Image 1 (cartoon, rainbow, N blue to C red):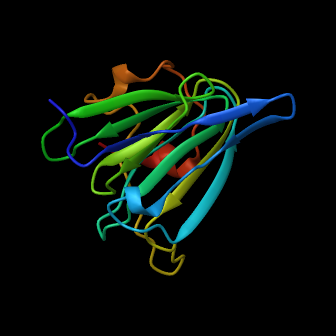
Image 2: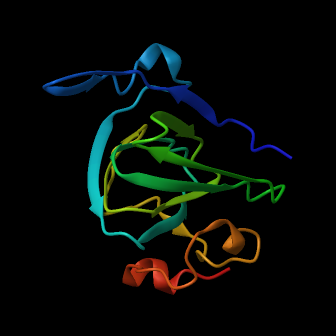
Amino acid sequence: MSVEGIVRIPLRRFADERGWFCELRRESLLPKPTVQTNVSTSRKGVIRGLHFHERGQDDLFTCLQGTARVVVLDRNTGATYTEDIGDENPVALYIPGRHAHGFEAITDLLFVYHVTEEYDPADPDEHGIAWDDPRVKDLWSTTNPILSARDTAAAF
């Protein structure tokens, strides 16, 4: 079973003695344009999510440094998708926000996500599903993640 709407975009890194260069996103490849870019760092063992958006925010996930395990759950069908992205697998994943999605820091990492809606703290479109929901709990590499208070409070 596959998760409908995920777009996998291979990223090309051009490396030399100075480091590397990579194009992170090209709007013409995306189903919807992105309007805000967020950056986070996470220590190994952190899980961020699972989150979903009722009003249509989609996310484009990219791991710039380290390795992240992305987990996606189609809340309607129960289908799942997972992929480790980052240093060894430079790809961007476009995820429709109706699906619950999150990532685990397999290593310490630097993560970028472009979103199709601006965040409104007065009316956030953030909803949660527990990281250890029975449909996804076996997809993570850890059984004892580091979680935010909000993610800890998420219920099945």
